[in-house]
Length: 103
Image 1 (tube, rainbow, N blue to C red):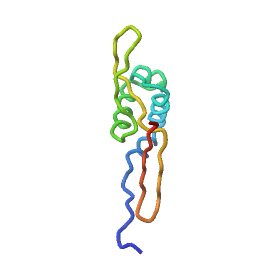
Image 2: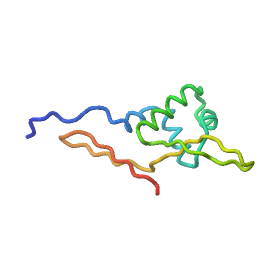
Image 3: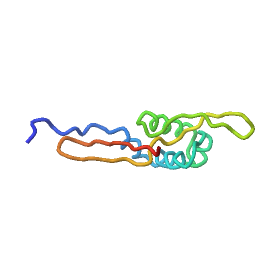
Image 4: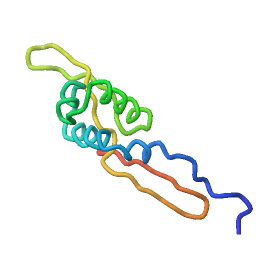
């Protein structure tokens, strides 16, 4: 038996996914890169809430900022999911989350 207590500190990816708005953002951004305005409409949340969730998802490594080029030649900041699945391991030493990208 280990003399060290299990690592039960927060796991950023799991913390981020504990919020419904963040989950909706991640699902929408997994379809294609989305702007904050599109994500705000998709989640039916305030833009301030969406930006907070975007920042949390970026900090947890589940979302990335990118540039999306529009048909008219302009470009906008968009957000895309960086993972398509997570592996969660729970054992006597604690909890680990390993993200897996789509490509």
